Length: 242
Image (cartoon, rainbow, N blue to C red; front, side, top):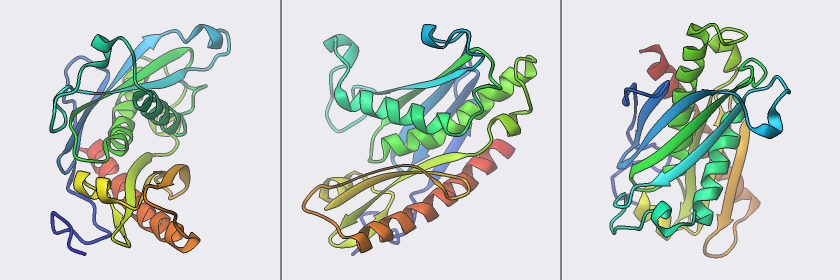
């Protein structure tokens, strides 16, 4: 099938990771997956949640939000509504879990890093772009801690693996990588896959949006997602080397 932007079925959208986009946070990245743009910031604070005090372990957590006009129509701010939506909670937890898989929490000491992922413009894949960009912001925040002699080890050891994420789906019977919005809403199967830079899986979220899917289709989706995540890991490495 012809994709709206002319990509091959297994081709990512253009990916850009701009470090230091925001002045104040210890780490910040503007991540772009085609028309999807997310500002990821990493903020370091001394101390950990009450339930973690005295453990000697640090903590990494995340918050996700969309600007009111990140999509075609304006949505109310959840802070104004007075209630955080279930989707927002779910994505925030996914980002936090994914990023905790790549960092040695003991080496952080009792320090916390909060990752804020704010969607400036949405065109599908906002949660996967958030994870991919937040990893780079987290790396820079860990490096900031190292510069202040507050890290037990070198950043490349504390951040012992990279983590990236990508969406995949079956549209008109064909597995596609990195769905844009018009593909996402038409997908028979929709999946988000989080992988390490070595190709191991951190988390897989998948559902039959319009029916069911076979084991062969699942394998095909995981194969194309793995290759996409490896490309994203290379983009992260290049961004951190720049």
